[in-house]
Image (cartoon, rainbow, N blue to C red):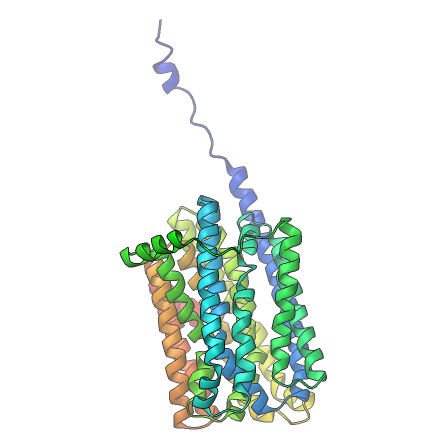
Length: 446
């Protein structure tokens, strides 16, 4: 008679892996991607309508003044973009730690906002731009309020509730553009953008409160907790260090060109550059949001390196194909369309708009590369890329503005971004054991 604990157990069939969970996850990721893509299209459409109206109400120097102010306060949106996926991971592993990290970052940013607002007159004197301080001070003070809904959005993203995340983002975008237009009609000039940002903050807070049923804790962190985190930072707490380093680098990457160009160019020229970028490059912002919201939780759940590799290559191939079809179709009508929509007022921006649109298919892959690296835990690669794109954006814009006018500014910035985008994709492909040649071919030959 055989021992029931021996051979009988060995002869039992190996249970089949649970495929229902992976299938359900895949469906939720696909649904999330669809929702966030729809939100991106909606926000971009409303942004275009807003720019159509604002382009008639505001002038080049007013756009330039806002672009210069924006370059100083983009740290808020940068911290928000970098912090959300960190919070998503922390919520999954330790919700209490996510709350403590959020409050520490929030109140640190609040302190920076106060210092920045007080320094606004000095910044205005340095750039010799009248009205800059009146625009900068309220933008600085808005920074912590813009960050405040991030924890609630991270909780919704961690639960893969992309429908509600999309509603928050869409409502905030529509509110921002609506309030900006109303303020411009009222004659507030560049302050209209501040009014729009304040409206978006109120909308986000209200919806996050409604969906979660409670306010996240905004109380200041305890002194002992701050001291402990400072010691962790000095001892090499890489998560917090990466948050701030990558946030500063992202701020330079998003708005460093406005700051760099302002060192050598007039507010009017920077305004034309800003106007042109908003027509095409603003699509990268919702794309980055969609990538952060969907790719980070999805890739964080993938343990198989082969699956990560194939998913990354498929994603960037899809982005380049769709981007090429869309933007190259757009190029054929951009010049006449800009002339017709604004009665020749913004004809100077046509070259810049066409150049940004031609480069867009490759540029669209950069948020994907960054967020896949972040989701896979390749923080050194992610932060080094953020630092590189921030430094390159600032330097190329400054050099381009110094060399000549709008044409050299645009070409220098695009050239720098192209090098960084390809470099980031190649470095990630090596981590994923993919062929660098295949990645470059995918980027350049969709």
